[in-house]
Image (cartoon, rainbow, N blue to C red; front, side, top):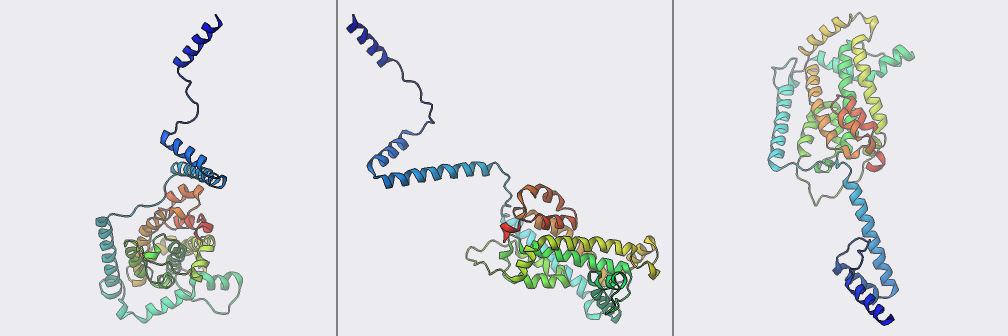
Length: 335
């Protein structure tokens, strides 16, 4: 009886299927290869295999987690779009130089026939750079040099554009496509401070070139290090200058009998229609409104990850979008 029972149990156990394993399914070829490798190699080699497998698993987890985050990289433009944009930018550069510097048809005097009054006005505006002299004279009481007394609307317009231009420095120095420009960014931005879009437009066109795989990155300049490390300070100072410029244009020099806000706005209209420098500043403001969101949008990778969405939407706001980029710049990652 016992012999019969044992035979019956043995037959049933052979016919019943084995329970499925709870372990993840692995291709049999992979299992066989790993088992053979582990059995046929000494402990040091087996340890290396286990370490490599653990590394692959960790890398897979990182790739899986990174794929769930938003990809901030901007794909390269196709050749047709790139060529069209470059043509438009170079054409804009030609119109900018010919119309604003050479032809006599725009308001004011062309570069080759500039009047002494325009030169004196430009010197006075430069002396009142960022309102340092006027504020030292009127607020601090220091009068080493008396600030030239100019119409506050012209001073406000001048310093507004210069303050905005200042903030472009860290943006250019952190541009992910800056290496496509083979010249010195230090020199380009220095000239931009004085001639604004005369040099920024060509940069915008050149940065659209195809990447050079054989290009060797240049050594970081002192100006770039200063501007990038101090991006927050540059943003705060530049933004403050722009805000002060607007307030100064509308309410500055109340003792100078420049009229109320309405009178000053009327002066602005006549100023833009009679002075080439003021007329050029309006061009600069319009171009900055286009270039600011363009550059920031292609460099969102440089922004602190938790602040990307904020900068992404604020970049369309003139001046303040650039302030947001500089304040939220991930300096440690960039430097």
